[in-house]
Length: 312
Image (cartoon, rainbow, N blue to C red):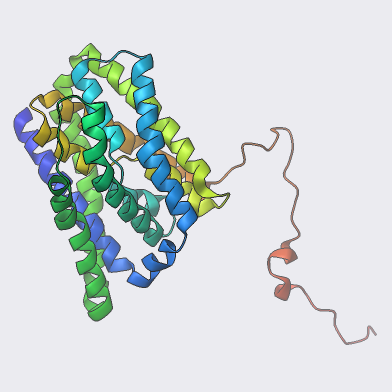
């Protein structure tokens, strides 16, 4: 029974990733992504934070807290991987521009493909990773669906308008079914005390990663939100590919899968909190009322104009 649920989770991952990226293509034109690619400073900061700072934080945390070797390996793989399709769902939940999330996702995926084969042999003894091993699934599962969606949006807009809501619903249903399947299918692993230590270390690093990424937004809310969410949501797809192909111990894949599920729940809540409709200031004193704004400041053209008629 548990094996069947775990296999179902694998298919649900595939369904969620493909439908999410197809939905991005069905709603975003290439010009919008090209627009965000011009923000070099933000994208460079995202690469540095995701590919250097977060792996360093993970290594430092593992030096502070001893973790079982197999789980330690899983955490290192997870920390090195950046760029997850789930960032698209988080961007949508936080009410930010999907094309910005897609741009950050593509940049981080390219960075992961280039750095993961170099870093992992240094950080984990005896492991070798081929770039082709990571690139092929990313192209088929992530880039190709997005390109197909963009082509449909460009050349078959009436068809796009009909299928896009269906694709979005499939993506949402696959996500929540995936969370349930992972929690049920891997529930026996929760009996291992060592996994809770590893989950605690990994979760702490992801929370730190969120705040580090958030601070890279250059004071702009949309960049801060996507920066925080994109940094904390690690590259699950590439991490799972490496864990299942480069290692024999299944517990490495287990810790990546469960930690990612915990991260998904945390980041969904964080994305809802970051939504502009749910903002609040942490610096406003509890006893102080925020200053009232003149309602006419928001729309000066709606200010009542003085009448030209003289009073009689």
